[in-house]
Image (cartoon, rainbow, N blue to C red; front, side, top):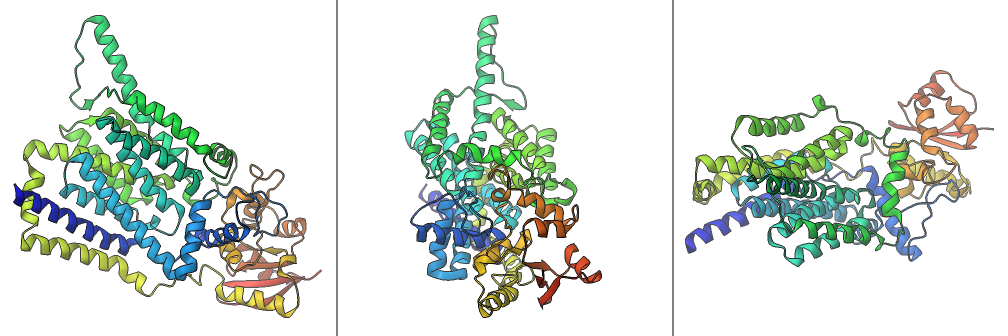
Amino acid sequence: MKTKINKKLFFILLAIILIAIFCISVSQKTLQNDTFYTIKIGEHIIENGGIDMLDPFSWHQNLEYTYPHWLYDVIIYLIYQIGGMTGIYIATCLFSIILGTVLFLTNTKLSKNKVLSFVITIGAMYMLRNYIAARAQLVTFILFTLEIFCIEQYLNTGKKRYATGLIIISILVANLHVAVWPFMFVLYLPYIAEYIVATIEEFTAKKYGKEVKQGEKLIIERKTKTKWLIVIMIISILAGFLTPLGTTPYTYLIKTMQGNTTQNINEHLPMVLINNTDIICALIIFLAILIFTNSKIRLSDLCMLGGLTLLMFYSKRQSTMFILIGSIILNKILYQWMEQYIQDIDEKIINSLVTKFGTFMMIAIVIILSLYFIKPKLNATYIDGNTYPVEMSDFILKYFEGKNINIKDVRLYNEYNYGSYLLYRNIPVFIDSRADLYSPEFNEGINVFTDFINSSNLTVYFEDIFEKYDITHVILYKNSKINMIIEDANLEGYKLLKSDSNFVFYEIEK
């Protein structure tokens, strides 16, 4: 018995170490848009001594800002203060390791296996590789995985610590990433739906004197703790008030959905399935297991899977939730099917893998995969100079300093994709990736986001927008539509101050 325990413990420790190595390899080194404004907002909150609900970075006057992930912003700024960009990259790797470890341990606990949990965790982290970046969503991935764990464990054991965990998770999400806070209550719904269906079945069976029979493919359980889970959910909803943002947790998503920002941001657009090979493979695996095997699935898991699939098709950003939570469901049904053919299969595979040869092969495979994914990052920079105007920002700051012009008085027109970098460099912006800030749903009468979309796509003539906002200077991608018109038509009134391989900077002469 002692040998078996030692083998299992050895495998778990080895699996966690290998998952950590793989998680580091898929962590993004080059910073994304949101990280730049995250640093500056964290700095502003600390220097300002709190949250003022006003935007300090755009040159538009008196814009109200909701600070949707204020706590994460503060944490990232403090990390940046200590370790700079390297510190942020290390933090991203650590959050990635935590996510991989939490996902693995959740799988082992809920599915009662270790080998398949290890394989599926590696697969899930691979599919999430493009989202493992220094953004608030990485932390919420961890919290949503823990939420599923706490819900399942509470329903199975009724222990209060899991109920407490769910309430704490609600408070954390409301302060770390308020935009996704309502989603955590969506995760309760499949369990409640199963309880309602099971209750109706029991009531009907008693009324007509029949026995409740389980289907060949579908398991419907009436877990008595579900009624208390509903109470916990209500308490967690009320916990949304435990934030300095006031009622923002209850209003933010509604306001966002009312506007047009999500219709013009790439990650919020509907998924085009043919362009997502990983998701196609995952869906095929699910369908093959459910259709062509005699495996069973719980009604709550089926509802969860169906709901997440619909959300994913509606917004490709939700594919992350499909991958995370879908991996837990896949583990359950796949291991249940395997156990029907080979009893104690997990133990037998562990016995093979903890041998010298088995351990060597595990390590070798993960190391080779990790080297493949980390190789492109070795020479990568923290800031991509082709995407963000690094040199141009240096010039802009020096130019206005040399002209004795207060940069806060400059009305600069810039594009959406690099606005966050400009404000990181203390250059007031026309727009940045905090899209909600520039929409009328959050600031009445403000249509900056729509005006930018229309001008950049030439739906309206860009000079009309320049005139509307009294633009004094313009920075553009060199290959942008606006710049091509300025150059090809040789438009008057645009004095070229600097041009590099990716950007141009103009002064508008009036």
